Length: 175
Length: 175
Image (cartoon, rainbow over the protein chains, first blue to last red):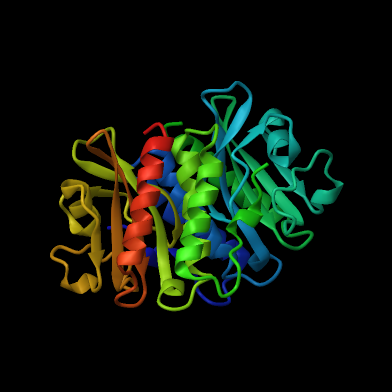
């Protein structure tokens, strides 16, 4: 049975090890369960607890979650499961960091959100951000969005692991 | 625009005031947005931040979120958006506190989960629980589930306000 212990990360764990645990837990969680809401809800929890087990800047993550394609409005994302403060409900493709990832299909690694053209200041506390598209059969179906309350919260290691997670999610869920 | 400030609750706020703020914010959030995933994701955030702004036992809440009807399996709930540690993916009607609420259509206010027949120990830290069904046209479409790490975490005031919230959610979302 799924157990809350999956969200417990060892004290002093390295970022790589924490991500490896997320990928391992995700693979186990997705076995026999393809519902995207259920799966992204648990992954948002895993990401949140992993970041908060790590040293700064990772522990300064203040939002971790998902936006998915809005099936009622073309070229629009709509809020999915997350951990953090109340968030924007919809985001047009091309708007802000999330919209750029959705439109381009490419990860956006943003060390200082103030320098990003058209950044959406949903939470003034957010200083840096990484957004990784979830691409299924060449089409963006969702994005992983993570905000950090300090600048340069994310690096290439985050990008590498989050892209692995996005790939896993793309295949494991019915979007 | 929706702003993260909605999740900020004044220091020293009373439980009644915190719930009034949740209901007010929920009403504003649902205006023009009927997507249940988007709406429950933001409500889980509001609930989590409200509880953590209150004195004990409310601040000991360790899980706040939603299960919804699983459209692929009869008489089964499936995990929706939440804040807290990784959670059980599916729950059969009648099983544990959530299943009892789904089957009976009645709020389950459980001061000590160990005393509840068939309690699902997804997280050993959870000591008390309240589960409020979301009922649309006489049918349970989802439940609000909140766990607390101390016994007697919830009282009739929680029940009264969460039932108001459930009523609001029932009407405001397309389930």
